[in-house]
Amino acid sequence: MLDIKKIIENKEFFSIGLSNRGYDVSNLDTIINFDSKRREYIKKGDKKRSERNEISKKIGLEKRKPTESETTYIKKLSEDLKSLDKNLSKINIKIREIMLEIPNIPNEQVPIGKDESSNVVKDTKGYQRNEEFIKPHWDIGPEKDILDLEAGANISGARFFVLKGKGAKLHRALMNWMMDVHTNEFGYTEIDPPYLVKKETMIGSGNLPKFKDNLYRDDETDLWLIPTAEVSLNGLHQGKIIPPNSLPLSYVAMTPSFRKEHASAGRDIRGIKRVHQFYKVEMFRFVSPETSMDYLEKMIKNARVLCERLELSSKLIQLSTGDIGFQSAITYDIEVWAPGSKEWLEVSSISNCMDFQSRRNNTRFKEKQASSTIFPHTLNGSGLALPRIWVAILENGQQEDGTIKIPEVLIPYTGFKTI
Image 1 (cartoon, helix red, strand yellow):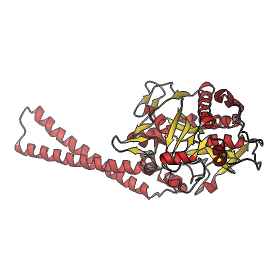
Image 2 (tube, helix red, strand yellow):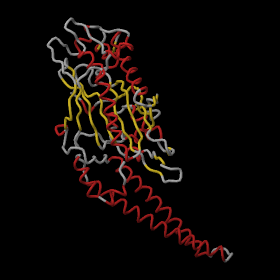
Image 3 (spheres, rainbow, N blue to C red):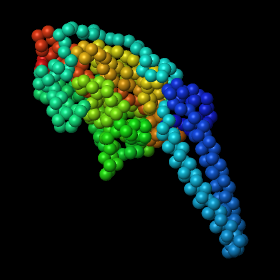
Image 4 (tube, helix red, strand yellow):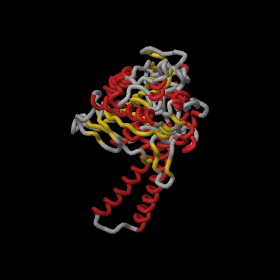
């Protein structure tokens, strides 16, 4: 959530930033008008409370009962205050509803553009395989009896899949290896969070109300299945004050993710590149505002190290204003080359959300015990996302004799060198 005070003080700045990402800035005028009415109601309420208190104080000092006219007038003041408070509550709800729908302001470093065509490729690393014998994962997986698309569809429907044998073990090995690297080398604290969260937690992360149609929900309990562990990790300190000298807080979690993918109908329909249920290792950090851009660079490096060790060619892309996520101020995607599918697959999206999420869920910190509270900056990123990284390994590992070579770093986790 943005700071309404800053919007009122510098409407032009926010209008430009939001326009660059395609947002209808007329809502800013609505917000400003509502806030003006809100202040008016507060001013009138304060005046009537002061007047009521003065009458009560006078009666008390004179040690007498109120006159009939005083009683009538105090009653009228109380009724007026009740009406003002009711109107104030309504307008505060309206302001919050609009504020929750406004996306984050793009950082000044973000390239301006209306969609992904304005994204900027920063660099490409590693060797891109293109041998003719390499098959796409939707062919080689079933041939090796490690991927069963028909069983997934039979059990649950379209965009579900079943991994078998060495395919399932490779999938588990990838997750365990990535978690070990993040915790043992990169200094993240491992978290095993809930997969079902409250509505307030979804709002705090920025997934509600914007992405309601893409989320799975249990109607009876009003609990929501997480679309990413970012939601749970962002909620670890919601409504709390993080003590002095605690930042940065670096968390990593390995969880399933659940998405309806309505917005992606018709995209990536072959294989398991875009599915309704998938695992992802998620990096998340709470940091002091002045350090967040440095930590963004560190998280990018963390993800790219994993790609390099998995012997994959990777591409770093900076997203434009028209392509960054709702919560994000600046985002970099990392894609890996899949020679069988003949395309680049996004396996990580790393974002600095500034204080947008912490303001939504009221997470604060103190620099010193006696100092005022500050909203920390939050950063998130996949480290890395499955099953796409599994797909890339399956396709890049294919040898001319038909075997699939396992990356060296995974062999201690799989117990086998080839499939």
